[in-house]
Length: 295
Image (cartoon, rainbow, N blue to C red; front, side, top):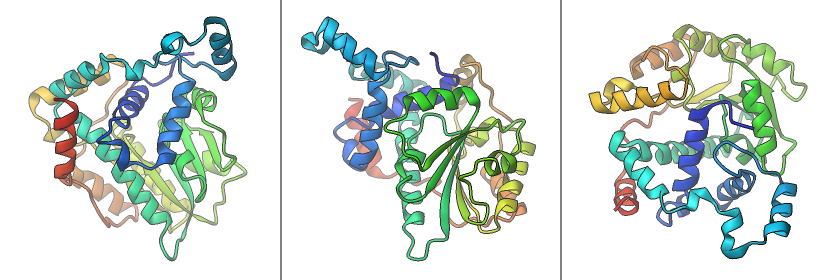
């Protein structure tokens, strides 16, 4: 079974590889590593799933001679060369992957651990293969929304399924967010939600983004929104060329490039107030880490 979104798998594989480096691993909690260790065991090769019965049969049939029969391609020696090539073609991409995951995880954790929490539910739009819903499901009920092929794929990939994680079929280009959520019996429209759009809004048209934000506020006036945004105008001509070419090769499509100011304006027009932004916060330890792993 092959994955529906190559960009989603690309992000998953990069982060899954990078989070294992000794300089990076301590930045993330053990629970996060457990998620990727468990999902990785279900993957036989790029985009394919291997269930537990297949693994047991393979071990019994072939043995585990020097670990070759279940060789992990993310630990292969050539992965370092791939990362170096990626960093050369799109300078800063590896920084971006690690910083984005770290910033989101800490920001969401801080919001859910607030002394007077109003957030009772977590909704991730365009969840892909990410860990956020599973990771925070012990804090609140989590809903992961994505297109049906991705949902079906992730249901097979998920670690021990937590009943507080609900996977919802949702196409941002055609479906109503309100209807998709309220049709799920576990969703409580009387409780506030924290909505996450990580690496998502760059792939939907402006009118769809405006509609989504409007629906988020209609669902509950105290709903909150955390998002990433990739302003391509900040890239050099070479970086932008390789980034857009890479997305085009996957068969997916970027939408009209919006600046940070555009995103803030759209949010404000739909009842959101900018509280904090992470732009320009790449710190020296990240530079040190990547000088080390790419040397």
